[in-house]
Length: 389
Image: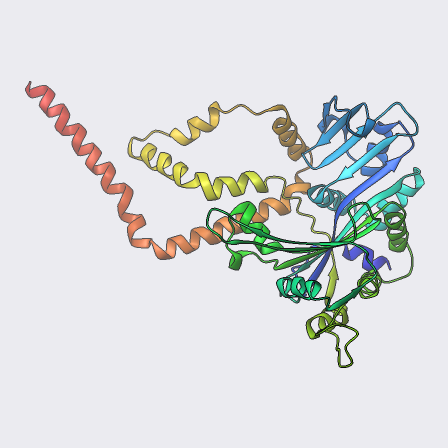
């Protein structure tokens, strides 16, 4: 089991059709000693966190770390302390564990040692091959070509009203308040809607989320410490809760849908991992690359013509906000936590530079230099005119 848990911290390149990740955590402690909990359970410093007097959920305040982890505090021992780690927060946690040479087993044990209860665990599976045709499954649900232990479900087919394009299909099984809920959606369409990423450039086709709450979440945490194989449990749970057919299940010749049978029976390809690169700068980097880089290139090129570092001067005049300054301080103190993320951006930008260099070798060599010569000639001519006048 330790090998499976250690695999949750794996950073090997995905060679599987489906990759499993822990994508969301909430952990409740009856203790109000949040400083000790943050130090002993998460293993991070309070000085990197930003405090806000936010009374959400009846708590008296909230500490936030890198816009990824919330620590809600209270003087009430019943409310206690609440940890909330979103997807990015889970990746931060993975990086910290790897740096300290700890495992998920170590972390879960710490939570239990300090009386913590897992009140929510989202286990997600990233499908890189598109094993399931979700629009087809939506039609199967509408035609009752399935069986389910869930009593409620919803289907959403989003649409961009400006151009008529699809925003993808999402299927929910179970109610929002139930202790177990499934959410299957087209991740590539979500990335196009949110980030403008072309469908063919999105590595993940579908995402299948299993959302555990309260007793179900605590039970899953205990499973992670048991001798049972997590991937087997996950697929057994899905198979017990859902099954899709080629026609109504009560039909005499009804057969299990081939895609569904392949998905359920192929769980040996599931790689349980938790990416450790936190992608703390992803939103900012993507925005710069997609929206700002052309303008930055223009300003840098103009500065080159006039031998003035305009871009550098713009950067120097910028002022960091409190949260960005704390992020910078955190990176300076713990550079290993963020190295993998920087490596990702460095490789991506290097590859992009190589492609552009190959495509524009001739133009790149002839655009800026002539302009500088033209400007020099212009200055000489202007000076000559002045002297003649």
